[in-house]
Each structure stands twice: as C-alpha cells, then as structure tokens.
Image 1 (cartoon, rainbow, N blue to C red):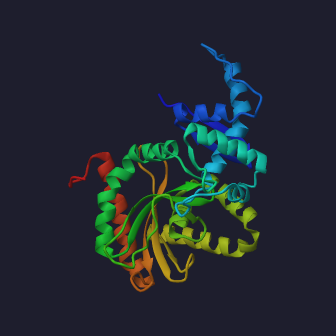
Image 2 (cartoon, helix red, strand yellow):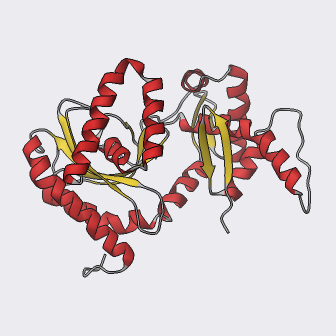
Image 3 (cartoon, rainbow, N blue to C red):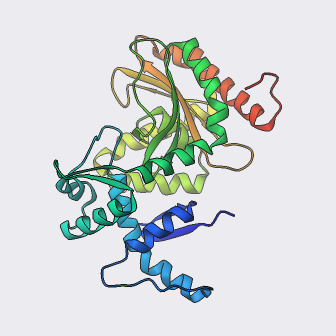
Length: 308
C-alpha cells in the first residue's frame, strides 16, 4: 500500500513523497540535533501529526541538498551546496553528514566533495522502472527520433522546471544531447510550454503567477510565450517553440495525460534549426508527435494494433 507524506507551507509549494519506506528514515534522521526518536508499536494519529511537523522542515532541507545536484555535476563541495540552497553552513554540514550516513550521498575525503549516493540512485531508478508510460513510450519515441532525425524526450514538472525522465536520439551526430535528469525552464521551452498548456486552468494560473514573481524582469516575455503556447495548442494540438530557449534550437511539444489519471507529462521533439526549421515543426514534426501521443494512449488502454 502506498503512503503519502505531504509537506506544506514551503514557499507555498506542496511536496508529495510516495516512497515512505525510503523517505521516512531520511526524515527522522534529519531532525534537529538533540532530539530522539521514540519507538512506538502503535502510534496514535496525534503522534503521527507531531512527528510530521517535527521532521518536515529538516526533510525539506535534506531534499534541497539532493536537488542541488544536476546531471552535469560529478561532485559538489560545501560552498557550492550553500550557494545553491541558500542554507547556512552549519545546516548544510549537518544535512550532508546525515545524507552520507544514510547512503544518499557519498563523500570523497581526498577532494572534500560530495557525490550522489547509491540510495538516491536506487530511488530514482525505482521510480523510472515503475513508470509504465515511459516503458511503453520508449519504442514509439525511438521510432520518431529515427524518422525525424531529431531528439524525442519526455519530462515531468518539478516546481518551475521540467525534468527529463526519458529520451531517444537519432543517429544524427548533431542531435540534442540532453540526458535523463536534465532540467529545462518551463516558460521558454517546448517541453515546459506544452506541459503548461495541458495543465488544469487553476494550476496553470498558479504556476504563471509563481513564474512572474520569481522572474519579474522577464514578465513580458513569459506572458507572450505562455499565451502563444495556449494559442498553438488550441489551434494545432501541439506547441512549437522556435529559438525561445536557444536561438539555434526549435522544438515541438505535446502534453500527455494517461486516461488512468496518472501524472501529466510532456513529450517533445526538437533539434537544431537546420534539421527542424519552423515549417517542418508545424507541418511534419507536430502532427507526427500528435500521432505518437494518440498511439501511446491506445497502447496504455491495450487497444493498439501493434505490439509495443
């Protein structure tokens, strides 16, 4: 049975964790120093609520440490973690020590730097391995990548970024080289904008407000690109982004929500402008991506004519 921990009132963001056996030991161990964990055979509701309140702040800090690592970081030092999280030095030192003890980080004593540990890797791969959508989508994504000569990817939203959870590349040597775990901004990428277009209206409005608050210097551009994405999606059923992220990259995205009600994802197809010019994005790649999404939905329902 899956149990959910919900952490609230962290800059207005809700965090949901569905791997209780892994995260609860982490949360308890990250309590402030001096506290002890009482063993209870049958904890009451009041006990559980008290525990949740006590561990939530430390849990979020520990997870912020882990979120600091990107696919491009072989290792990070204490100062880099302080800079990326904004946490005090003492807090970072305490959190990293606990994360090392739990196996979520590895510490290189010679370099004085931290790497993602085996427990974090195992947790990530467990999540991906259990994702039926990724498993069924990969053959379709590889087929489209070879057909178009560009990269095809799937991503999930994580706060104000999109995170790659699957990707397929063509044999084209100039195909985009982003990997699983890569992060992209929402408001200026096809992946983020198509996800935005597929959100429920209330959630979309909350996300837009958050993006405008965090990047007021880009407010005009954020509004222009998000409105354009909604127009694209309403008219064509897909979203095109030409040179919005990098001037030499064009991409197309579609939101995809499985009929079983599981999490919304975005599927994108893109590459350099020479391979994916604007006309090709609208005339060929976009319709092909819509077909992929339709076929994926059929396969998830068990109605496809082709074997996955």
